[in-house]
Image (cartoon, rainbow, N blue to C red):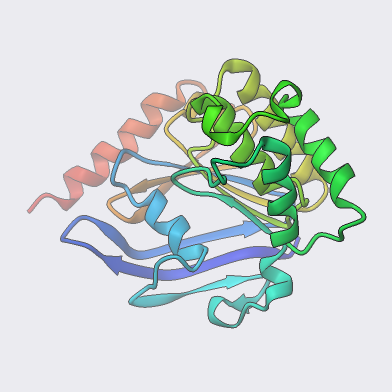
Length: 241
């Protein structure tokens, strides 16, 4: 399968142990690749760099075999992301926010109403379609952000801790959405603190520690949590002077 994303030697330091240090990540079409790490491991920094929100000091990033600095608007329009905080205009209702997001992604005006209807149904936002974003609960605001990121069927999906504030029903809806999009050829890169959850749908799990990939975990392996902490502790011990 073609690569949706390639990160080679990504470096951006914020201190001796903070940032990215020669990090390597790939993502194939149709793959859900989960990134797991403790707070400060570099997950959000990596995703911000992939999306052009943060400039690397060394290394390369390619989206669909195109260097990040030369990715055209047409390719960016096929990227869906949610990093740190879901974006929404607080004075606009859920439906209008989704319509605006669809336009920003270059959706055809004729197809937008159906696109928005589908997104609202997929993430269970029917009761909140005419509720302004400022009045939504944190969980429903996160559902709105995910709907905006996924409704245009992006070929590259980048999600940072997407299950934050979601109730169990929302987690299941999101999992099903991501698997459907991967089946249609999207590459999905998702970070999470919830190893047990991403293990339910990820094809590959990479462990980050101090800005580097230090190993991989196989979904379905018994006692993944122990395997994760063993990798992190072994890496920390190796770094000790």
